[in-house]
Amino acid sequence: MATDQGVYLYAVTRDEGEGPGDVAGVAGAPVRQLTHRGLAAFFSTVSLAEFGEEALRRWMEDLVWLEETARSHHRVVEAVAALRPTAPVRLVTVYTGEAQVRELLDERHEQFDAVLARVAGRREWGVKAYAVPGREEPVTDQQGASPGAAYLNRRRAALRSREADWRRAAEHARAVHEALMDIAVVGRCHRAQDPQLSGRREQMVLNGAYLVDDERAAEFAQAVEDVAGREVAVELVGPWAPYSFAALDQDGEAARGDAS
Image (cartoon, rainbow, N blue to C red; front, side, top):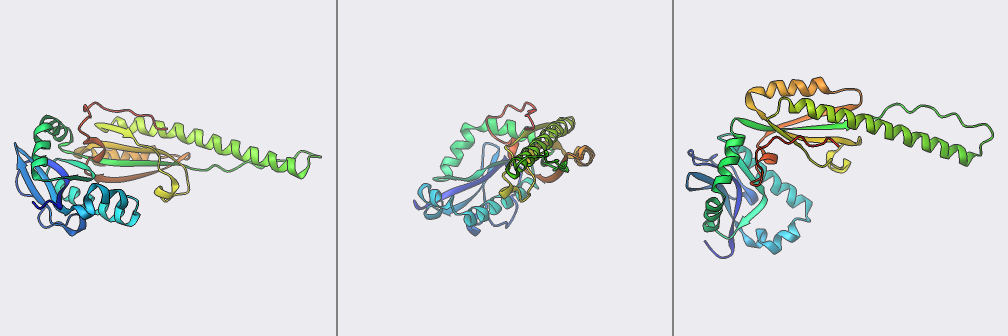
């Protein structure tokens, strides 16, 4: 491999046959398969002028480039995951060459094996819950209060109402999480998204990820519908490859994170 080229890694699976065909990778590069010790790594050869360490520091601030790269990465991972259990690799993971990827498969062989066993026959689902604003109670201005004091009273009452709404929604979200954990194999709560990322004005009170057995997917979806209530609007997304449960340092134990 030329010294100005690197290896962009998407995912690792067991070596169980051919890959996803002619799916395009990042920057339109073809996806190739490297097999080693019973594992298969899916990768593209990329230019280090675009994917080298210095270049990536610049590109990671370009939201258009980042979104396009993330879409390509996700497309490849999902194509591989449609074939067999898959351990997705973090976005823009680039190695100097195929030899370094083989070293990775050697050094982390047991961990990859454990991850692939954990996710076999399962997919990741996302559940997001948003606080539903309640109707603010009218505030009666105190007789004789100045306009400024009356305004402050209304502001304080509105803030108390919103805080109460948020507390009720957060409690409901915790109950939602616990109910879904009765079905999911494992779950965890990610940091709540900013409204600019979520695309919703309401405050997010749950950003949960759940690993669910394929045969219980319909049951899980029904449970999401059942646990929605007046305090929260619930959104189900997925299924997709188990991004949240493929980290090599996980021990496979069920995570019951707080929904707050």
